[in-house]
Amino acid sequence: MICNIAMDIDALPFSSRYFFPGFEQGDLFVRSTDSLIFALDSCLVMTAAGYIPFDYLYSLIPGIADLHYDSATLCWVFNFIRCAEYSAIENLHFHQLKCIASAANTFGFHSLQILCRLALRCFKNQYPKEILMLAVECGYHSLLPTLAGTDLIDVPLASLEDILKDPSIYRAWSLFRDHRIAALDCVKGHHATVHAGPNCVTWASEAATTYLKLERPSMMDPSRIRQAFEPRGNLPACCLSALECWRKDAEEIVQNLPTFSVILF
Ligand SMILES: [Zn+2]
Image (cartoon, rainbow, N blue to C red; front, side, top):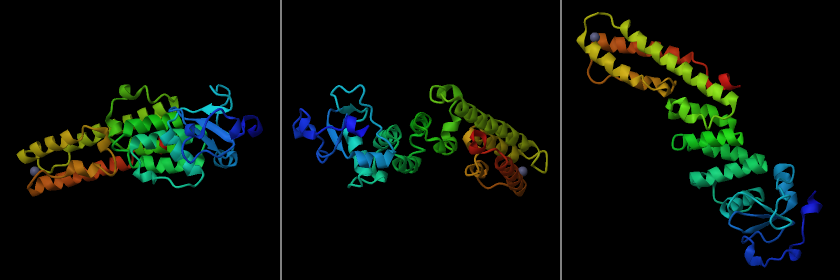
């Protein structure tokens, strides 16, 4: 296969100015969307992917595969697989990281996929929707439980239908959200039973405030549920005790919710 697509660099009708700087030597040729050519070592590509992942069937220039990534993305990716100097992945902007993660998946560069998966987690709260899209399209499924733990779970399912295209992922996301919504209702219902006396005016007000904090499914997370039960100010002992009791009930309900991983896998 390599013999069929490998070309002598001298046989190409291009001067070195068409090559991306630093990528002039190699037996495998690809081209970026901004029309720069990368010459690569086929052995290195084989080592990274286990096969040659470039499609030469529809090349505009015979022997040069047209890739759907710009030269900045390809430079980073190819420098990674040849262990050359590249900017640290944690210093990349999200858009750059997203393109690299997509390319790593397209080319089957497994070690880079693992690195991207870890780096993408750092952006989970800033770009949850974009990461969800990438996770579904590019098979980064281990990111799904992380994303389900963000505010993205508060977004109505109808708004994510275009992204959750995989039926099993759609089902898992939907079920996970439904469990949390049901848990919210269950937790809310406890406000009527946790206060010792029936006629405490302070409790009526405090319970109403707490009630309002229990509107979003994302609150039904072990890391967040405590926040809903922070007292507003100085409460009488009866209300503090009731709030504490309500919090414990809520934490128990949340602890017993199925995790996203359990539902999906
Ligand atoms: Zn009270």
